[in-house]
Length: 267
Image (cartoon, rainbow, N blue to C red; front, side, top):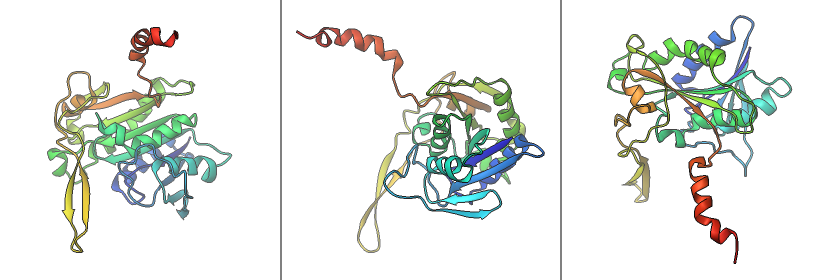
């Protein structure tokens, strides 16, 4: 199996080393793992692409490249430059330092990489490690992802749903904030929403007198209710969420159609 991996924390991030090991375990003997990752951290860029300027790419080693762009840029570079004519069988993005559950998923460059792969017609999985007080004490805060990643990816490849639609499924996997031995199982979960975690900004004045704004988030341990990804993670479960890039609010189409029917029909 040929696997392309990327992330949003950058080419030197420890989570990428964890993903390299996971990918190697999936690719197997004789398989190939190709890395195209951002040269610098790209956290929070979501599905952005560098549409108005070029992306510099450098070969750092055998099957290892760094691109000065977003995770989605890296996937495009991997598919249409590095692996042109020999597409991968699977794209993995991560392992992100911090959860991409709940509302975090909307901002996630890790998901952005997987989303771009899905839009390009390839199976894709985003993987993130929820961080918390219990992971701080670990020698390897990515321990849960490292220990369970191969099993989860293989489970999705063997038994997950993989369609061929224009907005094909991809998967968002979040590992719980605990030691590997404390992981209690898996949960298929919908995206939750933490009401106290909305992003805001904090102003600081630089030594030169200029005013800068830092984006900040809120508490990550707010529970979001049964059946959600955040709740599953806080309960020690690996949360698996099926995703699509389709942004249509399908639940609102019929009601909106009825509400606007009179005006839509004209005078």
